[in-house]
Length: 151
Image 1 (cartoon, rainbow, N blue to C red):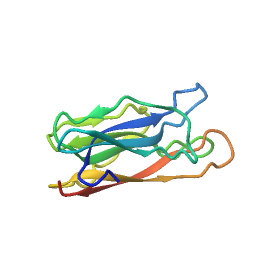
Image 2: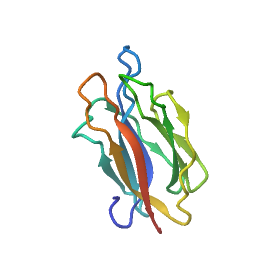
Image 3: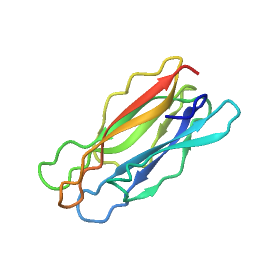
Image 4: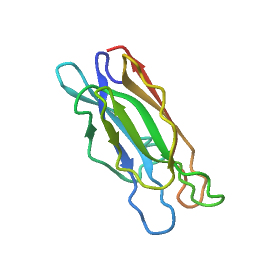
């Protein structure tokens, strides 16, 4: 969760670069960057470091005004066997109307938008990850749940 009195106004992703052997893992972590009314930057780290330490953090994408209010995931469907990536990218809506697309990968399709935090800003994140399966490049981030509260 963002510290009390702060809300997510930006994000960055932990993404593994393609290694040239089929379908690589993509999003291995999401980091929310939280601001207070004085524009002090706090970041909340949800990098799933117990299982998925591969990749690098992308540059921060900031809302030009307001806070993050909804998201949409780009997800690749199951490929059957071997390396199935799950969440490959994320896009956020800002309360000011802007859209911010992450620097993930292009595999998969964009899903539906989450519910919008009407009158609220996103202030926390919970992720679902699959433990390593013991072969190849396992899936990483499989689902995201974001939390909001009234500003």
